Structure formats: structure tokens, C-alpha cells
Length: 114
Length: 112
Image 1 (cartoon, rainbow over the protein chains, first blue to last red):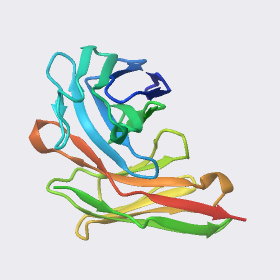
Image 2: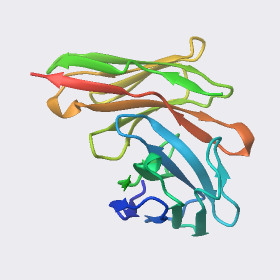
Image 3: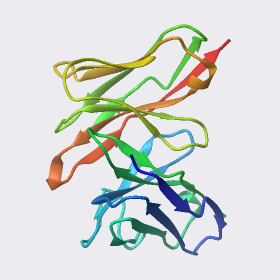
């Protein structure tokens, strides 16, 4: 299993500013994933972050808007840049651990952009 | 691309059995997973089917038919705490890494 913490748990930000979300895992993992989830909706993968390489972004997400850092095997950050109200969402960090397809999720960061 | 369809909402009575279906269209497939998410909480892993058939874990069972691109989650002896959203998910082995795509989600309401 894996225990994941995220900071901040929630934030209210002004349009045009940036927010960096931190994700810390209690064990070393190869890949970390960043998801976005609108209230009442499913999870949408933003990008996959491997330690030591550039993050891989999904269609509709670009590095300039969502830069990701992965400095070591237990930590990653996601920055939401030049925010607009459309970026209001829950952002979740996730890792794979254990057998099969098990993914473990952090508690999420609830972002509101005014 | 990947698409996974689920019923948006299901209501069931406490103590009863409920089945949540998932149909998928994928370009690659390793297996079908199920996750539970309570309001305000993070998704938590429930089960995984790599092969056809039924997997049982306590009150929860999950079924997969790869030939039909179909699976379901079966919840028995429903409890009020089972009220949550349930997501199926598939792993796509494209591009040298394994991306997990989540279904549309089913909101289960358990009533007394």
C-alpha cells in the first residue's frame, strides 16, 4: 500500500495567479499521476510524472499551463498557472503500488478560482 | 481512444443487492478495476479483474467478460455506508506506459 499526502488541502485563488500543489508518498514509486475531478464528475488524467524525465501530458493539457516537477521518487508538484475560474476543481495525486492495477490516491486539493 | 460507460445513478435498499455495470471500448486492455469514492473523499481501490469471471472480496464481487467488453460490481448486504460513487477503470498499455482511464461513475444511494 501507499500513503499519500497533499498540500494544500484547499485554496481560493484569484484569476491570473498560480498555485503549486505538493504530493508526498511514504514509499518510493516510479510513476506518479495527477488527476483533475470536477464535482460530481469522473477523474481525468492530466499527466504522468516519472522521476528523472519529462512528464507525459494527456490530450488537452499542456506543460505551460500545468508544469510538473518530480525531483525524487517520493515527491511531485503540480502547478496550475495563470488560473481562470474554469480551473476550479479537485486535483488528485496518485501512485501505483502493490499487485494488479491498484492505484492509491491522495486526499486531493480543492481549488476555487475567483 | 478509451470510453467506459456506467449508469449515472442507482438507488437500492439497505440489506439488498445491487449491481453496477460498466461497458468499455478500449484500444488496449489489461484488466478492469473498481474504485469507491465517498463525497469529499479520495477514490479507494475495491477490486481488479484481469481474467474473465467473478472475483469476490467480502460483500463486494466484480465480474468481467472480455469478449463482451463488460463488467460489473456487485454489492451484497448493502449498508448505509455504501452510499458513494463507484468508478470502473481500465489500464491502457499504449505508448510504453500504462495509463488508467476511469469510467463515468455511478452514484449509489442506499436508502433505509
